[in-house]
Image 1 (cartoon, rainbow, N blue to C red):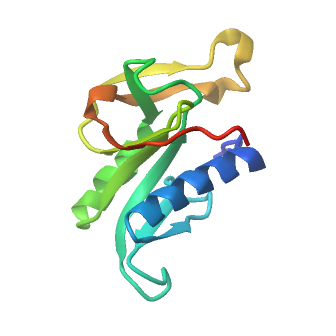
Image 2: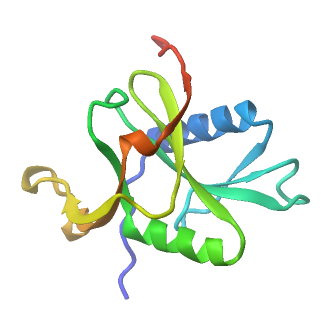
Length: 153
């Protein structure tokens, strides 16, 4: 079975880390990055990740659009499948999302609003895997944690 090509850049990973640490600080938790061989991005803990139980898993999305500019946020269906399995083990998964306007919001990665096959347009496709099954979550399902001001840095 061929290995799926990863397209995340160091800058992408830094943006995800910033979002994870922002939520962790807000909720007095510790965020731990999961190796990219796993489907989801982070785990969150009450203390040291090596000595405390996982409170929840998280998928991180960093959007350049403003909150509400589009009606939904989508994730790869494999992430929903992983979240569903984790739920059978008593663990929840959150979709933590930052928006270009500075808004930080989240929803539980459970019971999506719908499904579609979509991806990059033909002009921007990187490979055949850029069109895939996705699940989407309507924007009104997200709880806004903070409408932080976007810095110029």
